[in-house]
Every structure is written in structure tokens, then in C-alpha cells.
Length: 470
Image 1 (cartoon, rainbow, N blue to C red):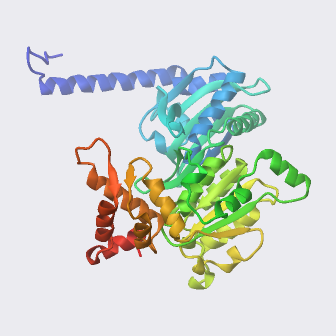
Image 2: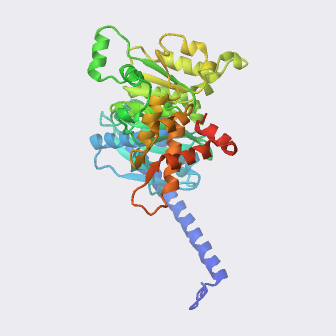
Image 3: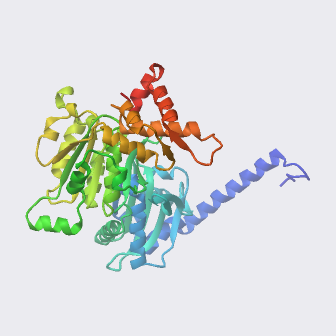
């Protein structure tokens, strides 16, 4: 072989010759291994389960991409019980994310395409601020509850043949009953160690990858004095939604249903979402799933999740986007029918609450709001009155110094605005004062009025309307 290097340079022709020789050596070695005893990858499977791959029944189940964390937990719990010393192995080769594990094994058995390799790992969230490592593609030799040898294969969050991302669990065994028993027990372990239980989750859609996502959200920490509503409204909401396990057991014993439907309606910016966040902070034991915007199409998956994780709450923001009166659509809105079916499909004694919000209650389908058992309580969240605007002004100014010579006059000047407008007024006023040399920020009639006049001026009328102005 020619000398391919000198002190400073790599000879291109020599490098190509060396690369060709190495590639030939690798291919020849792979052929020899296959000829001598078959693929090392296939041997890892077939020698363990005791039969050729062609005779192995393929027992599999797929899950949504968001279930990857639970699939990992379920498999880990199963291995800890049945084969705590088991070691994972992987598959090497191109195009793995688009192939079934059994197909890759079949290709490997013919001596091309895939080989024994390292395990692929990825990171999945286990909470709002915690993650863990999960198997993206890997296999592990284990045993069924009966003791029969099995191989467990995991493929996480990969696009299958239908181009829909999913997680896949496959069990390879000589006996189908043994494989099915493993699959069923792993599913039970997934539910037992469910990372979603008691969490706040938000469904979303990744437009670039066209897949469905679930994100963990931190649980809000709000007190009743941070929610400014008309007298008695917050108390009414808490009575309807916030109930403990002992209270629920008592209701069931008395023959009363648990399923609840709550509709919050009112103009934009009045505090509907803020009120929902307060309820989340009170429902410390409940799983909360939030749907909004483009994720409203994931209603079936979200409904299934809340039924599984009782006590649970399904929040559907801007429900008018899918629940407009059906005459507005030729043939009806499919998502409206889906919503009605999902609410009706939850048993009356299920500890599930549907919380719906809308800025346009007048366009809602009457079958949703008028039929008992779908919405049990509809509450208007109106624009704040004088007393409430005063409370809001003080609430949003609680971290600065507030010196008002004429608080009543300032509050009166804000007649007709929303809670979000008051918050933005305070924020902009603080922003205008932070450059001052004083150690503290002071809000006065003068600087608040100046910002209020600016926000309500003719040139800012669109901004004012967006913020909830008059």
C-alpha cells in the first residue's frame, strides 16, 4: 500500500484507497460472520428465546409520542421485577426510525442493512423542571411472568409507516401467550408509575414535525386575594369544582354524580384564564390537561387522559372555536360532535371536571350549554366595577410604592376597562419610572394618569382595545 502521509498532508488518492480497503474488509467480515453463524444481532434475540425469528409472533402496542416517558417507566419497573441485571443492546444501520424492529432483524438475518449496535437514547420530561433519559431504540433480554424467555424492544417517538409519530413496544417470544403477558404487565406498570398523574399538562402540536406534544406546566401558586371577581363568584366556583376525596365519597354514597361542567364567559381580558389558574392551584391532587388553539384537535386524546387519571380536569380554552352553533357549518362541526360525545362518554360518577372558557357565549351550540350533565354551572366574568378596579390597582402595585392623592378619581377614569388593562397600566407606569435614581419605584396620580392618557389616546385606540380598554 502506498505511503499516504507526509509530515503535514494526507494524500487524497492514498486516503481513498485506504477507505475502500477498509470498507471491503468490513463487508467481508460481515459476510463471514453471517456465513459462519448468522447475524450477531439476530443471535442476541433468537438464541435467547430459543426459536428462529421467522417463527416468532410479533406482539406489539403503540402509544402517542407523549407517552414515551411512561413507556420508559413501565419497562424499567418490569425489568426491575423480572430481570434486574438485564443489559440493553441496540441496532446499527441507516433508516432505523422508519422501520419496525422485526423488519430490521429480518434484514440483519439476511446479512445486510442492520447490525448489533449501541442503544439509542433520548431525553424526556418527567415534570415541569425535570427530565430523564429514555431508550429511543433498544432491545433487552428478559423473562415473562411465567419464566419463559422474551426480548423486549422499545422504539420511542418515531414516524411509522403511516407517518404518524408514535412510541412502540414489541415483545418477541416463542410463545404468544408469554409475550402478551409481558405486554400487559408493562402496560399496568405504565399506569402505576404514570408521570402525568397529578401534573398540569398542555397539549400542543409541533408544526415542523407534524407530531403531537404534551408539556408539563408548573402548578400556579395563587391565593384568593389575587383573584378579583364580583362578590361571591369565586366562592361559588370553589364549591362547584374544588372537592376533596372524602367529600366525593360522601356524594357517591348519597347517590350524587361527580362529573362537573363549568363554563366561564365574558369579554377578553376580564380574568377567565387567571381564574382557571387559581382553580389549578387549589386542585393540588388533580391532573389538569389544558387544550387551546391548534391543539383543540387533540380532544380525543386529552379526554382519554383525564378519564385515566382521575381526579382530573380538562380545560378547553376558547371553546367557541369548536363549539359554535351547528347551523354555522354545513353538516355540522366534527369537533363539536366530538366534544359532546366526549363529555357524554364520561360516567356521571367519574371525578372529572370540564372547564370551558369563551369570549363569545352567544355563539355557543345550545346542545352544549342547555343540556344538563354537560355544563352544570355557567359563570360570567365581567369587566370590573369600581370596587374591583380599586382592588386590581392595589394588587398589581403591591411590589412598588403607591401614593395616590385621588385614588377614586383615577379609578373612575378607568371605567369600562378590563383587569388585563389595569395590569398593563401599572406595568407601563413602573417601566416609565425604573430609570429614576431612587431606590424605590413610586406610582403617583401624575405618572399613572400620564400613562392612562397615552393608552387611551386616539393614536393608541387599537392598542387600547387589544388591552381591554374602553
